[in-house]
Image (cartoon, rainbow, N blue to C red; front, side):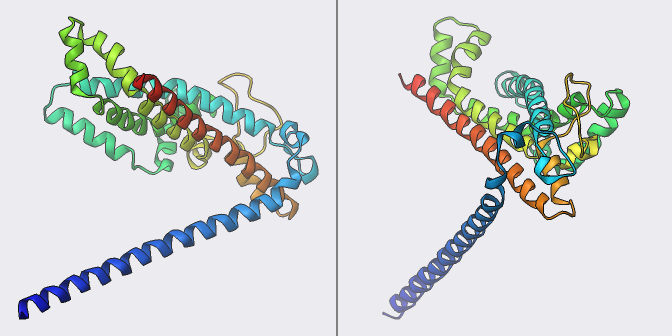
Length: 292
């Protein structure tokens, strides 16, 4: 009977600890949501009145009412398109090689471990690497191309890891069935593995690109301009981006520039939400095709 009472007390103690832990986690979640809601309310309140067509088409100015985000918007578009074109084929190709072609040995495990470690490196480190290699060593200058290569290095580990996970999720039975039909390794990869893993690959890639879109630190190191009175026409031109432009406005002494920065934040959030929504739509679309 004594043992039963002790066991009952232990069960009650575990339930109490479990309830306290759940309550603590719930409180932290609610606190984060409330803070986020207050920040969004403040940004929308300040920025919405400044969102006009002129704001999207004008160049930056020392007058808040004449300031626009057009060069930053175009610069971000340039960098994201070039970054995706550079990082996506390399990242997916690396994942395919590591999962389907590389032999399981210590060297392969060493490569996978280092790729995982690179995904956690602070973005400012990639900025210094880009400054040393692309801007100076390869003489690309402080250009869109140098920034795109730097951002491609930043998101490459994320694309590789997400692509690996997507490729691992392909059932082994599908691969074996493909080989049983007499297909080659490459035909199995392109005809069976990639179509099945494509939703996960696209989701990881778009989320990685969304991260690159919001980065400012590596671009400052590479040489992004805070004030631009022109638009980049070629990959070798100088540039600015949305985060850099927003950072510049937020540091201006005039109070109206805080409202202009809030309007820029709304534009950036809209683009990020659009990118994330695209990832969800593509994932669901290809998953439906696979089921069919």
